[in-house]
Structure formats: C-alpha cells, structure tokens
Image 1: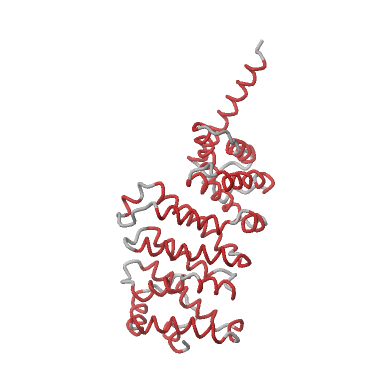
Image 2 (image 1 turned 90 degrees about the vertical axis):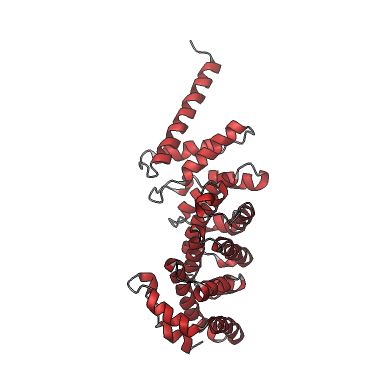
Length: 330
C-alpha cells in the first residue's frame, strides 16, 4: 500500500503532466475545445500562481503564462474562471518583480485578449492594474536595451524586440476597444511612449514602425475619438509623428503612410466637430501646427503624391472628404 507521501508525490507528478500537456497543446494549437478549456485555464493559472522562488518554478510559471497568452480570442469563457487569479499574478509582479519582461507581458497578453470580448474588465484593467502605466514602463525599459540601428533580421533574434511586438499587439487591442480617458495622465504617457518607439523604429523601418502607425490609426478610428482623447493625442507628441510620416515619407511603406494620413483627416474632422467649435484657441493651435508642417514640406506636392500613391478601394482610405478639401478649411 502506498504511503501518504507517495500518494501526494504521485498526485503532484500527475498534475505536472497535465499542465505540460495543456501547455504543449496550446503552444501548437491556440484554439481549444470549449469542454476542455475550463480545465486547462484553471490548471495553467494554478501553475502560474506558484510563488516559490526557484529557477525551475519560474520557468514553469513563465511557460504557463506564455501558453495562456497565445490562447486565441475565439476561446470564450467566463471571467470568474480567470480574473481573480490573473489579477493576483499581475499584482504580485508589480510588488515583487518576480517575472521576466516576457513573462509579465504574457500575463497581460492573456488578460487583454479577454478584454477584447467586452466582459466588463475596465475597472480591473484601467483602475486596479493600470495597464497604460505598466505598458509604458515596460516599453521604455525594453527600448533602452535594444540597438535600433541593427537590421530587422538581427533585431528579430532579440527577446526584447519580440516582447515589444507583443506589447504593441496588446496595446492595439486595448486602444481599439476601450481607450479609457478618465486616466488622462497615464494615457498621455503611453501615447508619448509609442511616439518615442516610432522614432526608434523609424531608423530602419522595421515591423514595429508599422505597429506604431497602426496604433495612431486606432486612436483616431475608435468610437471614443472624443475631445479628451484628441487632447491626449495632441499633448503626447503623437501629432508630430503622424505629420512627420505624412510629410516626409518616401512612400516606401504605403501602409504606414496610409495609416497616418487617415489619422490626419480624422483629426481634422474632430477639430471641425461641435465639441471643438467653442475651443477657438485649442483648435487654432493644433490646426496652425498642421498647416505650418504642411507648408514647410510643400503641401501641394504632398497632396499630388497622395492622389497618385494611396489606394482607393480599401476601407481605411475612404476618407470623409476629398484630400484637397483638407487644405481649404485649415
């Protein structure tokens, strides 16, 4: 007959085997069975909650978080199944810094993917865990570690570069679905950080450069493109980066130029809206900045270039008014 210790050891081995099987499946196939999903999520979160300070435990925790983070958005399940646990994991790291940059991003990646489904996570993500503040802090640290003059093939070998790409994916989900403006200072910080990331990635036009311009587009394309959000965009330095792309690019990257031009015209729509008609000084200041930038770069050539270069059959290029008209009401 097995002793209690032997039974306990056998149970622990079986639990570890089950967790390993869950991780292997999700790492190879991000879409899970709806019947197995609750079991897998609970099992992996149990592994990730282990706070024992050892290299082996940390590796197990990080692998579990990585498997959870790549779980497809199609995998839907109730927030009661994961919210308390993933919140505890993130809060514990914020207090004790027990995860690597990749592990911490994986925890957020899992939560933000759930956020996309509109399960009422705003109070947790925005107010309790402070996503914008944490993403800013992580991006700044990761940016400092990279030599941005390397070509993309060399950068792709770096864990930091790929972790930045993962953060930008999470930021895009967050921005597209709920850019909460009540925490303005944190969101100005996040947007300013992406603006700096744009500057860093611009030197070799790597894939992160495109992700930054996509972020700018999402800022302007969201249903929450309201006065406060416009102010965040203007105060953060994002406007200057958008205009930089619009005015000075050579159209080698049509997607990035198109993204920024969409922002350009959307911003103009905002400044012409009823909310801004009474804000004469703010309206004039931003419009004047846009006009001076265009004038500096030769706006007639820019307009001609856009007419020749930008596609017209894509939804993102169906602008609300003709390109030429923009210059008439600046």
